[in-house]
Length: 139
Image (cartoon, rainbow, N blue to C red; front, side):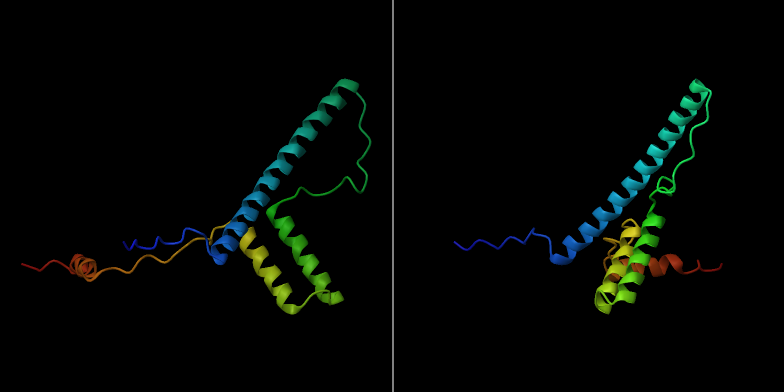
């Protein structure tokens, strides 16, 4: 008895790469949200300490004065890294292009991942659309 072959359910390499890019984008968004929440919590704690102790806190050191991690700040950091790679000729031009493209895709948070073109429209549907677009006959 001949059984038909089942289609492979194993993702292709391209599908796996797209999934990883989407995963990285979502992870970056989660880190941004967490960074913002931590900063807000620290500010509330500092306000409570100042209110309770009635003494001002010492100014933060230079190392402590960093901007929150956001998707944009991460993209800027990666751009700086690629610029340094180029200046030091640390990696090939192809690798730098690949890194730049990856950062662009990941920073878009998967907005373009998995978007497939709509399936082709059959002749019957095209005919129906054509009829719907035609102006009604005048009396």
